Image 1 (cartoon, rainbow, N blue to C red):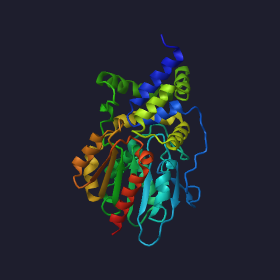
Image 2: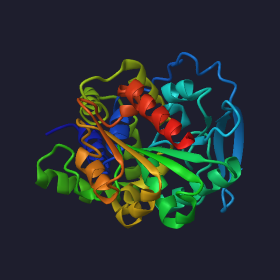
Image 3: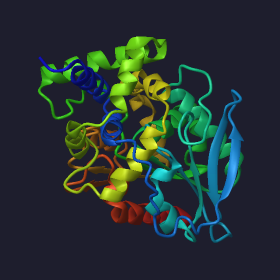
Length: 346
């Protein structure tokens, strides 16, 4: 029989991996070894971005950094990060976009330096937050929305809530490694019976953590512990053929800094996310959809489903790339975003 600690660690990891998009984040949590190494990305520290606080409609304070663009009629590009990450997960994009457009990088609630707000956060709440960011930091002019993973879901929620923004103000959208729904059906590269069990366990992990007590403490200690198995999970779920060491350390650090309560709060929301009915709104925009063909969390089929509803979209499939395409294929991702910005600027 496996030691109790190992069993608990495996159970916690297995349950949270079932959250689909959360899997890569969880894997990094397992291998973090509490590394708080300094990770400097060339050029980021030199950018003079303005730190801004936006107050959401429920009073929650959201943290953002605004980088001025070339001026004139240049669009404002707003970047929404994924689950358990933060605005710091866009290092290459922030450097490359400097001088191309005015950019806004923000921390979704409970992540980075943004407040958590009331418990019970779901994707619709994140969509309203993005609307507050647009209203406060891009009240006029052309806007391009870029979302990775959960950030893409956030954009879909905003499209569902405020379709009038799209086509008029929001001219371009980039959905990176994301899904319009069906996360609960992702097999995570596992046999179907095992995957079904994992998805069934995930919501109970969240409620257990929220409830506190000794079991919740055991789960959190397991998630923050070290494991060689965690390294293998990271390779399999967060990246494809290449896992950049600097990128892995960066993601590990960001995830370690995300409160376990926030991770637990959002697990059911990721599983229940369904915005297929809102995709038609994106037909009014220049839509870019990108995914790696080695993404086990939001597989290629999910991006193809988005494009099926928006046939005019540009679909880019990156060979050998996993879920963290913004780090693993940063040059390709950035180039396509810049091309999108240039198209909507004409």
